[in-house]
Image (cartoon, rainbow, N blue to C red; front, side, top):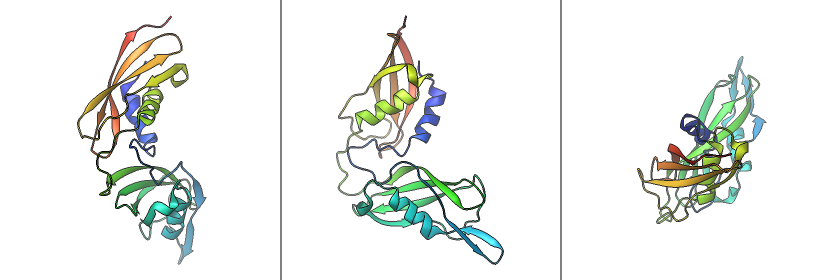
Length: 197
């Protein structure tokens, strides 16, 4: 029911979902033109990208600063990263993709790179782990429910198991691994324990 090779890609696509029991500053992807033209060269305006990231945030007041690279040439499908620093001392990197040569960009997602001092004893968010498990299924529309345990502490290398229930009555056990101590996880393996009708 779960395709582990697809699961890694699914996690990459959904990496802006917080797996920790605290709000992350970045929301869903947004697109906007952020172009600067000068001396025959078209570049991305970092201030406009930074503003896009702030506007895309579910908690813009939590953001202390956003830094994006200067002098980035406008080029379709090119990606670059911006750094968000929050007022609690945590940091994350946002991946930005250029959609065209006209300066239209979209935020693709983010990954936590540093936890603030207030982030002790954090746990993974069970509902977000379940969303990853469901999106990793060969046919996510055929999934009735995914259940993951609550209270899983952040520890690099630790694994935990979730259950995936199909609409056809099937059931799978999915093992997830914590790839770091920041709440990033991936599907390690999946095993069907009950075949559906």
